[in-house]
Length: 85
Image (tube, rainbow, N blue to C red; front, top):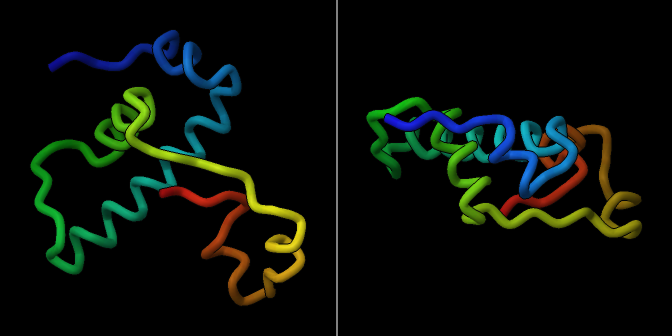
């Protein structure tokens, strides 16, 4: 199995912290799918999410100002500051 190097991540995302945040959000979606039985995965969830990020399979966009204002205290943790598709 080939491991991702930090240099591969930096090619797409100069800010490694943002890249890890996006991959962590995707990992949460994968975990939810695993718990619901919608996804079957036999490998490390976090490595898989990072690979998807580097290969451009995760689309991320910042929330608009209106969307940020619409966030409530209860939905804050669900929405984060961006949208993963």
